[in-house]
Image 1 (cartoon, rainbow, N blue to C red):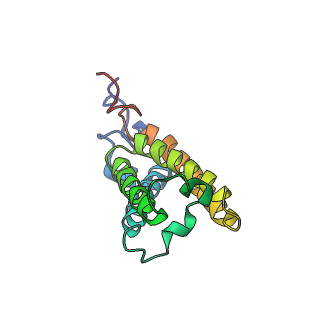
Image 2 (image 1 turned 90 degrees about the vertical axis):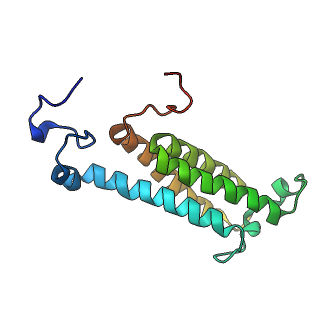
Length: 156
């Protein structure tokens, strides 16, 4: 249904025909932009840092019970984690409705991993907050990203 017959103030901020000033004033759209930006930048930065370990020694966050059966060292496992995180940030940038689901799922896995390590419960709680923010991004993206969530995978 075309929205061009609606008064300018009644148009949805995600509508390309909505005036730019209205979009900039819309609090929900601003929240969407903040969350989308955060979930592009943070996974890419943290993912890339898995290689030089400038921010922290990332392999300390891999639960021993999960690391033992791996055919690689925890450091090498973190390289794979870094690649997944960078890809998750790219997916959020290209398709936030899908990317937010990917990031929320990834954070869920990180939380389970952290709960298996005594002394990292505070980090797990922080990541739970990030998971909730990713869910909020996905809900906002349903308003501002017209493509279906599974758009790249769904048949046209």
